[in-house]
Length: 128
Image (cartoon, rainbow, N blue to C red):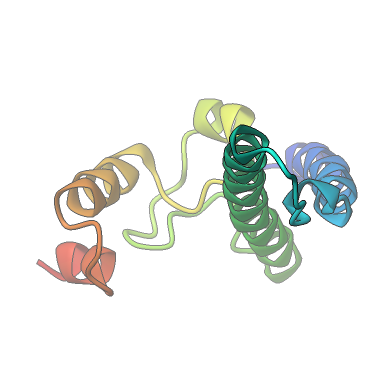
């Protein structure tokens, strides 16, 4: 990967990092609101649950973006963290924070879907 391509991805990742940081600062939606009406309480609880899920998803994405920026700094960006093959540039254009090539990502997704709650599933799957 050329320095120009890496610089382009770094710029994209920096912008995404700033956007996620801004989104994560807004936590008003998870505030617990009391209401005299039971239906309003249920509605607030559902909205709060959705906001918590969004924060969780965005926090995970923030970790992935930060990880990609670290990989740019250490020179390992664009290389699959499992098989150490180059990640297809088309994949990086679509998902600049990608850690794995398509094959390894598909394996991880299949394993996590079939064994959601176990720790270390991806590592076990890749070790096989």
